[in-house]
Image (tube, rainbow over all chains, first blue to last red; front, side):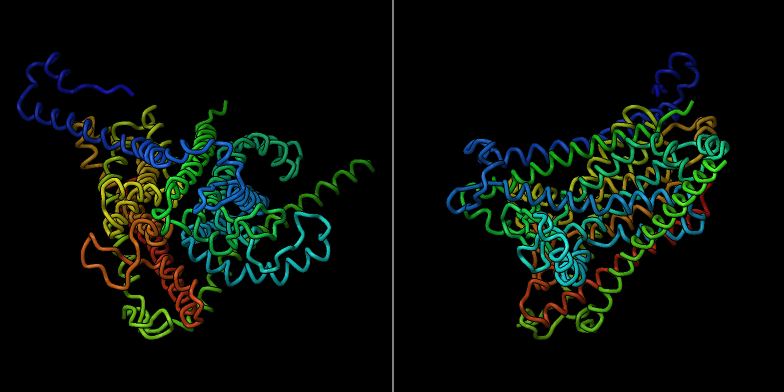
Length: 329
Length: 289
């Protein structure tokens, strides 16, 4: 869009119009345009400031230790000056992976149902349900996890898994408390579901109906149409929705912290306790100024989270924006 | 013929099966909401009392003695209201500029992208950032620091909410005003603002709801205290942290009150969420579509 400089246009072409009122209105417009423009720089400026501030504060520890020592070191004893993030990185990864794996199949099916099958009345009920689910604060999810999911894992899922899947190491029950990766994964799956469903739903509605009609007209069933026509068109968008959900799960703090057990160990089973990075930061902010390099270590954990989430977010949002503005010839 | 018939049957069985699985998924998602609300109500209601919402913690409160969490309720309201107000000051001009001056231009595209990216940054990172900011400026955990960080968290949510609503404004309206000789600023001020009203209302309530429930960021920036804050520079309690801290207590009475605090928080958030739907539906009647 080209911006027309009103004041110049008026003075050059029709000199008669440069009455004081018109000129002052044009000046006012120009002033407003500049002020508003400065405001729009704010989001970009914020992203940069947050990144730079965390980088500056975590610089001391990046200087003192090599990157591979920090990432792959598995001893965490800040009082001895040992900062190995490996158990925490793995904990974050496991919790996020379990959450996403549990969330994706029902979310995909629900969004297909809402976009392709559901009556408009069902849709108008589902929308507020998803909005409410998205509005519930993380700490309330944590309470739910503590009261419902942890006992459920402890009393139902763990014995079942022990009986039927025991020999497979990632399903073996080593610490029967209920607190652990599976409980955190279930809570996370419910937390990220509204986001994933609404993004997927939106992606499905970008596909024009002509394509569906063409397929249905030659005798395909609705599911055949979706599988062979709609899904291939939106596959990148579906993947982007999943990545977006994963990036939400990566940074979730309070709800996970309440059910994951918080034991710094390298997990081997989904019933093990873990200690994800956000929980590490939240649990130790109090004493981080009292031990040398501790604050730098915790803020570098925040920096790592931020960078990974920024990359995930930017990639998935670009894909979603492209799908939204796609031209259908 | 036989072959065709077999094929016909199979794909229809698949169709029915998939449809059944989809309905099951929808029920699971809706059921999760029901289950969360049910658990919070059943466990929170018995401990909920008038004292909880009208008194601040008395001596020995954290060992099960008398008092309530008025400090946290008021603290949370101050935090969320302050954060929303501060975020408004920046989000309204950005949304307006996106509509009137940028539209679907390239720079508009980048601004929206950066807002969406900001939206995805988790609150623990904002909290850590707030912490570095407080060290740099030499201020302690306070209501003001909490308000600033919540405003940063709410800014992208509110701006995008307004943007999505105002984008649907018919372009004819804008053209009509421009054809009468208005400048773009006058269009923004006199036409867009009115059309934006439902969007602004939704955005305020959405931002407020997000702000009042956020725990990880206020943990770093607002601190916790048993008193009701009297100044912006004092630390303040908040509901999410009241829930969190009381659940960590070994005393069952205190844990019970944690559940009650969770119920209070849930009621506030649900009221705000439902209120925003109702209000935006009402206000939408007065906009031109």
